[in-house]
Image 1 (cartoon, helix red, strand yellow):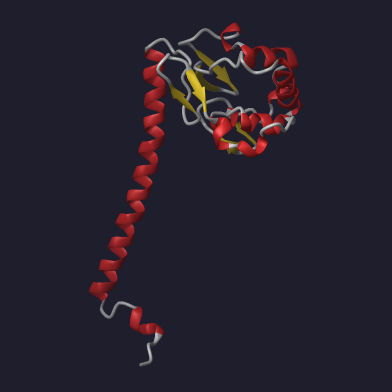
Image 2: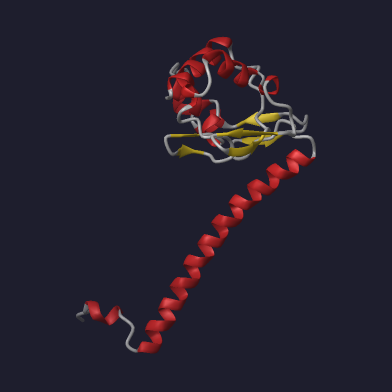
Length: 174
């Protein structure tokens, strides 16, 4: 039995329009699901701000029983374990989940693509270790004309060597 390629095509206009309708509904469903996922992250962030900010981040962060934040960057980018380059640390420590560099990364925090032309090494290192040194929790910061909530967790447990490597990398982005 020979099957021609035209046998898979709709035989009538009615079937054709039914097929187009089904495809359209599926595409719209995917778009709606994607948009609702983004808006739920924003809603979650706003709720966090209303409750005093705290150490809450989207995507790579999960609140644990103690109210502290657990960074899942180590789980998501295990290939960077032990790699001591700024870019690798940016991924391994989970920064990329909220921050963008050259079009890659999250949208929750500021785009850091040109961080070095805006802030110096000392400011960047302090921001990583203790963000509340620059911005109060529950407030907002305007960065490149965009207002962001100040919900970045501190990375006090990151070694000073790694903070230095990461800060130097971010300072090099101009």
